[in-house]
Every structure is written in structure tokens, then in C-alpha cells.
Length: 253
Ligand code: ADP
Ligand code: MG
Image 1 (cartoon, helix red, strand yellow):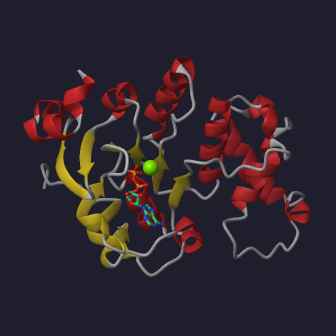
Image 2 (cartoon, protein in one colour; image 1 turned 90 degrees about the vertical axis):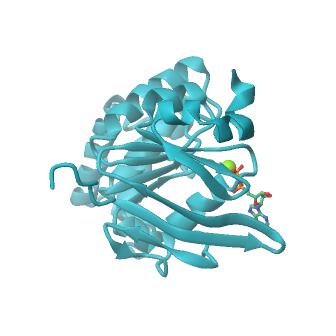
Image 3 (cartoon, helix red, strand yellow; image 1 turned 180 degrees about the horizontal axis):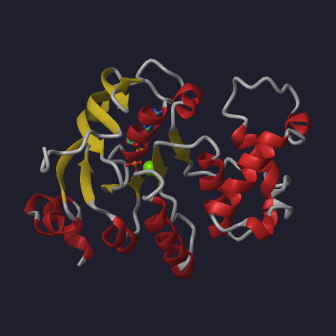
């Protein structure tokens, strides 16, 4: 079975979702394979964030399934999916700005809900949680900032901290919605390098507008237009695809 397609880590099967008369996801299928960065691109309003929410568990599809390592997680909420290894970073930062970097990571290690700690200050004293948090912080290169207030970090460092928070749950797959948003050219470049290395830890489904980052990072790209995937392929295949150029990339060049 040397040339067989590897079993996907994450799989979206025939997902549909409507908001009233608007069909925001139209029979969407895609998968995320071990070690890859799979970019999801498309115009504003195409339904990228809506799809990510259905994968992460914040929004229920009308039809279709989400599978994590072959397990159907469609009926599970966000916290349960996170505990099974779905690492999510948010388009809008979910970090507590007045808390330190370490405190945010400990909170992440607690897991989203379902923790025995009623008060997180007692969690902060838990040696196991602290060790997990510190390891994740070091993994993203923020070890020298552990005791800094999160508000003092640069935008790019906050993105890295979000990944550290996700790492504390030992993710099998990452889903990221526009991690480059709001970063300058330098910040985007740095985060691009960081994500490039992160794929060794877990594959990444990456929604991103920054096409330099997408073309530099993606092993495969799927293009979403009006809620439907119109093409999936390598960077070269997508660049050459005439449907994609007409619907989306044409005005980029
Ligand atoms: P993208 O992330 O690709 O820009 P979105 O997934 O945010 O697109 O939105 C897809 C479409 O669904 C848009 O037309 C948006 O206005 C609509 N939409 C998204 N969320 C909701 C919601 N909760 N209720 C109604 N319409 C929504
Ligand atoms: Mg969006």
C-alpha cells in the first residue's frame, strides 16, 4: 500500500448549512492528511468561517459529518472535540489580556470546560498543568515571556500564544481562521515560518486571505465560492485552474 492516500486526520463529509434562505455550506467535503497544511481560500462571505465553526463544534450542520481520526464527532460540542484533539485558534483572540502568558496557557491546559477546578487560581498552582503549559509556551518560543502580561505581547506573539494554548490539549489537528489577520508584513512572515514548522506537530486546516502565506505553506488548497468547494489541488493546480481564476484568483494578478 505504498501509494495509498493516508487516512485523513480530519474529514468533512457532505456538510450543508443554511441561514434562512442563504446556503452558507453546500455539500462540502474535504480532508486533512497527516503532516499537511491544507489551505481553505475564497472570497469574503464564501462560507469559510461558517465551515470552520461547524468543524470546531460551535455551529451544527444541517446535514453531513465531521470525523476526527475516523470518529464521528458531529454530535459533540466544542469542548469535547477539543479534548479529542481538535486544536482551534480563533479569528478574534480569546486570550485574557490582563493575565500572564503562563496563566493563559494553564487555562488552556484545563481544557475548555469540564475541569474539576472551579477557580482557575487553584489550577495555576497545579504542577502538572503548569508543566504542560510551560512546555507549550516553550514550543512556540515564548518561554522568556511566561510571566509577562499578555497585553504586552505583540500581535504576532499573541497568535503564537493562541497556538500554545491549543498545544496544551495535544491536538491531532489544527483549524485556524485567518491567523495572519492584523499582522504586518514582518509579522506575517514570522508566523508563516512558525506554521511551517508546526505542521510536524499536527496538520493544519488554514483559512487565510494572505495569498503569499497560502502559496508558501499549503500542500493543498481548497477553494470555496458561494458555500461550495469548486476545486481542491496543489498550489500549482489551483493557480492554473480556470474556474478558480475566474471566480477568485483572477483579480490577484
Ligand atoms: P467567510 O468567512 O468566507 O467570509 P462566513 O462564513 O463568515 O464567510 O459567511 C458566509 C455567509 O453566511 C455570509 O453571507 C454571512 O453573512 C452568512 N452568515 C454567517 N453567519 C451567519 C449567521 N449566524 N446568521 C446568518 N447569516 C450568517
Ligand atoms: Mg471569515
